Length: 474
Image 1 (cartoon, rainbow, N blue to C red):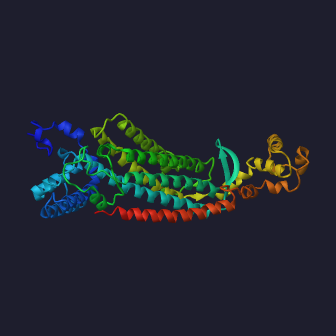
Image 2 (image 1 turned 180 degrees about the vertical axis):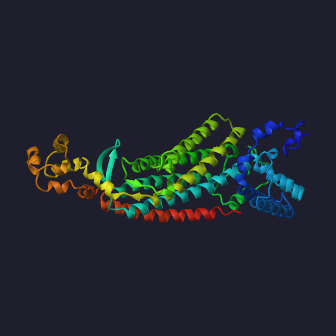
Image 3 (image 1 turned 90 degrees about the vertical axis):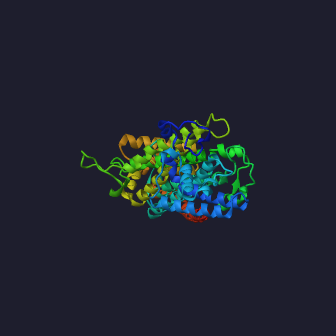
């Protein structure tokens, strides 16, 4: 007869290779706090419902808290034979307190138990990610504020396009992170649903009180359908989706940082503490953090694809395939949190080369649109002004000079509308300050973005604080 806790109908022990193949304790042990918290709430509910005696409930509570202390002090030995965190804890509890421990699993299945643990774990992870997003947002705001007058070339197609403020460029990433923050808020809302009480798939015949458990564990809602409760992994898919989009944003940032700190650009210089060298080439200073984040993006996106593939053909309700939800999820959580943390350090530590950026906008044609707009303000139709500005650029290319180097006589040969004030109109500072439409790169608009960002981050911190308090269930 099998010694497994579920082995009553089995006449043979499980093959050792099968034990290792199906065991999840190697990775799901990190959910021990969630498992213990869920069991404490479940035991309290069973006692309230008269299903469990007060004496047994007290013994279970003490036993679980002893196990919590053992795990956190590194004194708990996990067994592959017992498959997962749930069975490891239950076996240790039963060994410690006897029959009372074996009554804990009354009116629940590992199906709804693992679903509960994962919901609680993801809920906690989302709050941590929200905090990490906000920290990187703060780094962007700090760096943008410290360099609010720095002008740089803006690019399209990786070609010089129009002069912009460096702060405006950084705030674009702040805005991306704002959407990431909102997406993870949505993940939290759809994770904050309690599955416990669904049983294996059909509920239970015992008089349980699911609302009591939900209140104990601070869940906003309870799954209405027991089959949905044990088979739903939408919240994990949403977490991985939000994480993938976030990592794509960090990957785009990585690409720009890698370009900016190259000799060809030299727009920024990364702190030595955030770079590595070459084993052969003494002069090298490599942007490894950015390269690794760019590379790790594929891993997180891969976890999303793996999870979508795992659930796409599953009939209701629980299937063992769903055990595959955790390794990729855990890795994605770790990768996202670490990537956000190292980027907050990198952004705060990098040196902004304002002189190089300024020199760049003085030796390009990114003010050509402003030259056309100058003629528009003088009354010329834009399409005609565009053509005249293009002719001016062609003349400069032919002579090997820039628009600011053309004489007034040269300009007036192209159009009689040109006057001495054309040179002021195409100065980088003028190009930037005149782009004062809402959301534009002007000094005024960028300052408004920075002020709005500070207000938003205050709201974000209030939310994070409230959600953090909500996680305190042990």
